[in-house]
Image 1 (cartoon, helix red, strand yellow):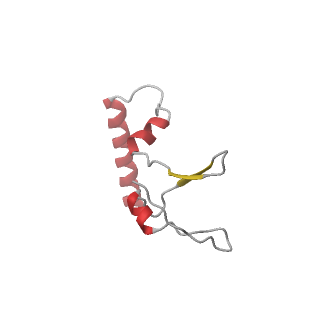
Image 2 (cartoon, rainbow, N blue to C red; image 1 turned 120 degrees about the vertical axis):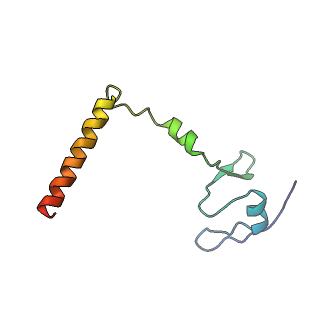
Image 3 (cartoon, one colour; image 1 turned 180 degrees about the vertical axis):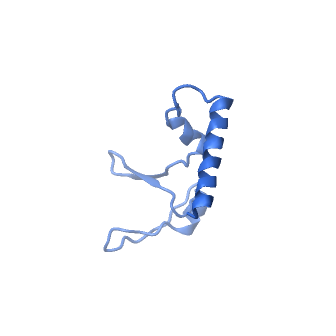
Length: 93
């Protein structure tokens, strides 16, 4: 598919990407574009691919808290939270 559409540059260096091109590339507000100027002075505009949550999560180092939590750790945390809540209720905070 080949689409050629003219756009006008504003005094602030901005232009509107025509709707026909936005639709063809499935672009939405907030999507990012990469502008590449080739050695022969041709401008190439490439949409930056959106990453899935899974891909973004894989970029982060794994979350480690030292040793794995045990059921006793979880039970202790729940008990502590319940005691703190009871104290807040009794003190009227």
